[in-house]
Structure formats: C-alpha cells, structure tokens
Length: 104
Image 1: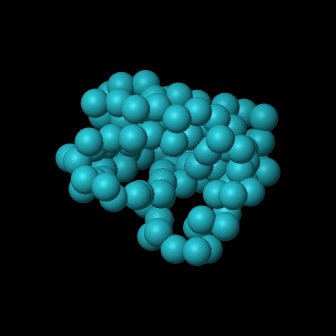
Image 2: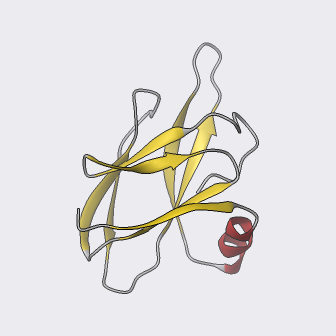
C-alpha cells in the first residue's frame, strides 16, 4: 500500500519475485494472496532496493511502498510493517486497486 500524497498521481510498479503484480499510486492498496514461501518485492529502476520477505500459510503481511525524495533524484522503497491497529487504520484510508491471487 502507499499512504502518501507525495507523487500521488505517479503509479509505481510492484513486482513479486520477478513477476509483475500491479501498480500503486498514492492512497491505494494492492492486495495479493501468496502461498507460503520466500519472496522478493521490487519495482522499476526508480525502486532503490529489493526487499526480501517470508510469508507463512494464513499470515497477513503489510508492505508499504514509500516514496523517497532526494536532492537530485527521487525513488521509492518497500517497508515490511508489523500487523497492528495503526497500520490497519492507515490502510482503511486507501482505495483497493485489485486483489490478485498468485502462485509466484
């Protein structure tokens, strides 16, 4: 999800272990259902770094796409967030882009 107004109209891609999963703009959520396993979330060349994560059966994991401003060049990163009421509250302020069931 991206709960930011910075670059709100700019859509940044989401890739899971090399497979395109969708695009996210400001105040939007992309919901993915993945089988248990190890994954890497990344994007295009504006993505500053890949982020590895593991997920177990039935686990809910929240990953924030954070736009990062720079003096010469901006970009974005992915943050793994703990499941808590604050995160869920932020997500309710966003619009669901799509739900994707995938067996990456």
